[in-house]
Image 1 (cartoon, rainbow, N blue to C red):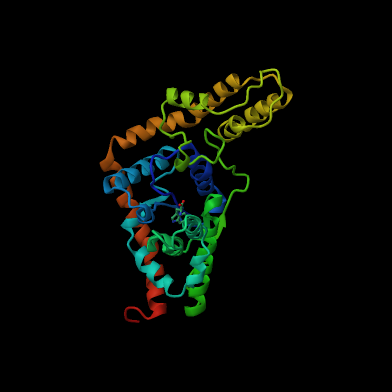
Image 2: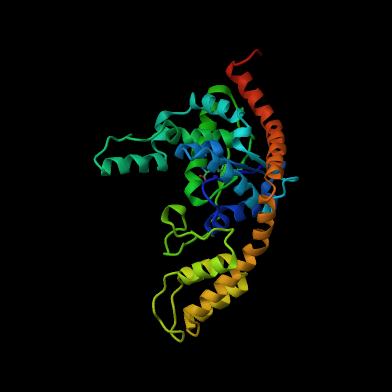
Length: 334
Ligand code: TRP
């Protein structure tokens, strides 16, 4: 039976795009039969976050913020295993071992690395200028996260699908060298899952500065929604689906989303009304979690305790794989 794992990177304050694009689908999968046997695993990949060398205090704060966010939106730390990646240093040992059977050429083809190289070349710089080994080997660390727990199902956003495919290749090349030790994982990408647009209609992303923080209070939500760019069609005129409607589909119940879509197509709804509906629907979705998040953040020691307990369970989950990998490769004594 497939077991599920996913990691959510601690970079900045979590926003609505993170929630709709990956946190909610992963929590939905964890609560469904698709999660398979064994507790679903969620972790905060702080080793991965080091590729951008964040200030240490910011990194730790982001880990706690994300931990509180996941719990506020329904992760159950007693049932699910929630841990911080760096509390499981076995993942670094496995990264090295996997790197020894993983072809370097496989990593040359990773989208994130290729994009960094293309950017350098476009600016007349050397291909690898400023690209750290961490960025280059990022997919191997990610493979280790997954393979360490023999996880088979990995819910991710579309942008992470290739990384899970690389993890498959990494597992297969290890198994070719040493026998069938590792479970080959599958990406689970919800194809209906929209690319969540931000203020300007582009993908919601911190790097575009077009995001809405999940912890935003009601007045900030309203102000943010009011700034969504629209055309100037009056209420009576029919309208094409736009950013407002795309976000509404993500946050409102299906029937209400269909209703607004119909009114867009036939005419009879103005942007001001649509924006008010959207702001209300966002508030209904995030309001209760915002309060729970604030309570959790007020008790950092409690959050650290949750992560410590999760790490203990994660290390138990990883112990069998590390032992099997060491035995298969000739490390330690047989
Ligand atoms: N790379 C993922 C991201 O940027 C985070 C991540 C790290 C991850 N390790 C993982 C996701 C393992 C799924 C499984 O979003």
